[in-house]
Amino acid sequence: MASLALPVNEVFETIQGEGFHTGVPSIFVRLQGCDVGCSWCDTKHTWQVLESDRVQPELIIGTSGDTARWAMLRPNQLLEQFKTRYQAKHIVITGGEPCIYDLHELTNVLITAGYSVQIETSGTYPVKAAAKAWVTVSPKVDMKGGKVVIEQALHRANEIKHPVARERDLTNLKSLLTGMTSNLDVLVCLQPISQQQRATELCIQACIENNWRLSLQTHKFIGIE
Image: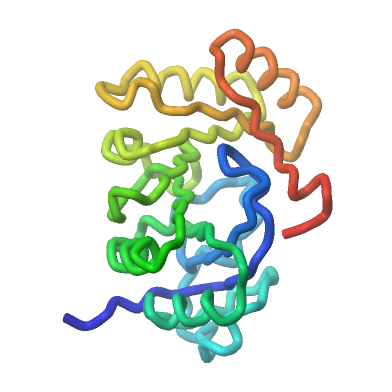
């Protein structure tokens, strides 16, 4: 069976700044393509997969930046680059919306090679990945794309990292949690959007009331990707 290539927007090494793995040296693999339509998205350049933006793989590896360029890369191509260019042993597959794609091969190849793997997803697509992959669901409710958060993604989640700007966001989260029929002990992290004061206050209070965790975007505080 032929190896499955995926459209990759950028690959870079940094420190994970959010959620359970905050502070862990990580290699980020950002995939191209997303139809969720979050208004506050800071990677809107990844939404469309246009043939006119396709480039050669060597222009993707080791680069970061807010451009729509992308290249098709196979799991073994990525693994070889990770081994020769980077020190981190934790891989974060993000987007875009990475779960548009079947991630079984990529995650299995990386885990077999000794890496830990984390997937960051909106929860609006089924998670197709290795059983040992850590899945971070940031539920996107009532976004422009009209997608809904699905039970399979919530069931597969190791962590729900919920962006919060206002009370309604907390209401949406509680509704999702109430409707879950499994995975009831999933780790819940609240993340104030853009470090807004009111959002931060809401998150702190909700974390205390529900015994959840606060997730701050530490990479923005220290000025890294």
